[in-house]
Image (spheres, rainbow, N blue to C red):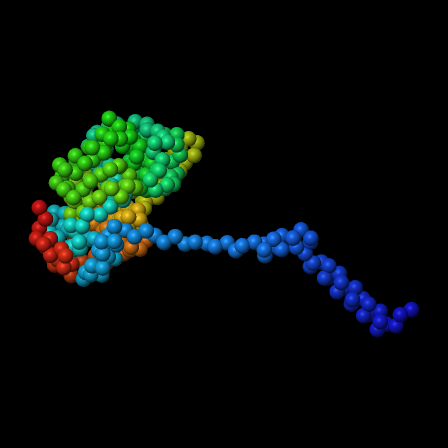
Amino acid sequence: MAPPAEAAQKQVRKKAATAQKAVKPSAKARASLKQRRGAPKRVVRVVPERPSFGQLAGLRNTEDELELKSSVALVLDQDTDEVLVSKNPDAVLPIASITKLMTALVVAEAQLPLDETLTISQEDVDTEKGSRSRLRVGTQLTREEMLHLALMSSENRAAHALGRHYPGGLAAFVSAMNAKARLLGMGDTRYAEPTGLSSRNQSSAKDLATLVKAAYGHQIIRELSTSPEYSVAVGKREMQFRTTNALVRNPSWEIGLQKTGYISEAGRCLVMQAKLAGRHLIMVFLDSAGKYSRLGDAERVRRWLDEVGHGAASTTSSSAAELLEPAS
C-alpha cells in the first residue's frame, strides 16, 4: 500500500490532468484558431461624408450673431414680411426633401381624388442614392396616405408615386412643379424630380420662404406635415410611421407647417412655419452640418426672440445686409 503522502500527490496529479483535458480545445477548434491567425486582418474603412455644395462654396465659414450652424438661414414675419434673421439668403443650393413641399403643393392644387388608390412600382425605387423604403413594390395606398407619408416621414417612394400618378405622368408633374415655382416668383428654383434625392433640385432661402407661405394656405399640407405619427394598413400588416422633425413632438413648439431634408450635397435642411414670441414666423435653414444642428438653430432663434422680446430687431450676416428691408 502506498504511503498516505504519495497517495495524496497522486490524487492531485490526477485531478490536474482531468482539469487540463477539460479546457483543452478540440482539434476542430485548434484548426479554426490557426486559420484565423493566418488570415489577413479585416480592415474597416470609414468613408467620409461627401462635402455639401455649401461647404465647397465656403458658406460654412460665414459668421453670424446667433452662431447658427446652418450655412443659410432666413427668418421672417409671415404677416409683415419683416426679415428678422438673414444669412446667405441668396445662395442657391440643393434642397433635398424640402422638394416634397412643392410636390404636395402641386398635388393639392391639382385637386386629384385623395381616396384614389396608388400603387408603388419598380419605377419608384430610388436608383440615384440607393435609399431604402418601407414601402415595398406593390404596396397600395390612397393618394392622401402617400401624401401623408411623403410630408411627415419624407417617404421617397410615396413622393415619387404621387408624381408618377399625375395626369400626363412624371414629366408633366415635374413641369407643373417648375411652372408653379415661376408663378410664385421663385426665380432661383429648379426641380428635376419630386423626391429631393437629386442634387439638381435647387433653391434659395428667399424662394423657400415663398414656398412655405404658399403651402401654408392649404390645410391638408399643414395638417399632414405636422402629424407626429401615422399608421397605414399594408396588406394584413399595420405599419407605423413617425415624423422626421423632433420639434413636432415637442409641446413647447407651436408649428403650423414643416419639412425636413437631407442628402450629402444639401446638408441637413429644415423649413417651418411656427408661432414664436407672439409672431407667426417662417424659418428656413439650409446646409446644416450636424445631424441635430438644424433643430438646434431653430432653438437658437427662439431663445434669441425670447431675449429681445416681441419687437425683435433684425440680425444679419455681412453677406445679406440688403435683406433687412421687407421682402417683396
